[in-house]
Length: 238
Ligand code: F6R
Image (cartoon, rainbow, N blue to C red; front, side, top):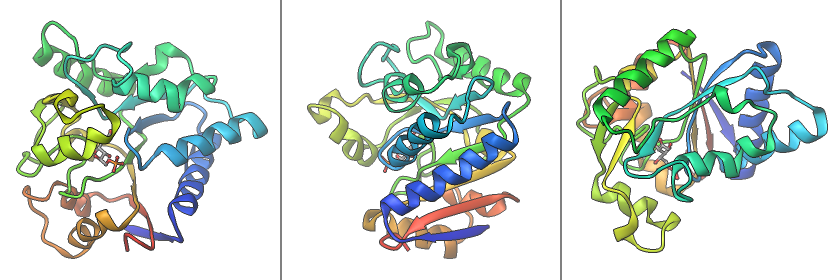
């Protein structure tokens, strides 16, 4: 595990963007796993800036997002689908057919999870997965207690995660109770992982990840078992 120290959120975002741009430039057909939330927003802004000024192309890049809320279709402004278009995809030359998020309104959600997992496999697996982390150690929506063996699956969100995500909604009651998420096993099959951690609210979680035991009650701890993880963390989180 490699740890890169950033001064603050902006610096973390620049370092992360530079890291990804280099991967994309080396492999224009990169299969990229992406996250939503506040942590990667600054990175996405910089990817857009770079695309505008330096012309880095995403036309042959394929993306798989970690998760999507159940019950939210892609045109719901609070869906992760909408988040990704608003914060990244609509500003890049990526092809819509290469963009993948779980379908939160699939008629058979269990089948949707299976199909998502299979699609990732068929495409050749994720080359680099970008991750944020919840303050309880969740990655994707894999809450404490999730089996490390889990593939893409349906989850019930914990109250703490719903509260943390309420800032994106008018009221906590509007935050969905369920989501589809890549499982820990899905994430661990990525060839490489880039975890971003910023701010004081993540400090204890990062400490736990770096010093605690690997255990299912702290999902991010599993990253200690992955052979190629880079963490970019800012000083408030370190
Ligand atoms: C988002 C995701 C989550 C977030 C985590 C941190 O796709 O999978 O695990 O990375 O909840 O969220 P922020 O970045 O908003 O602190």
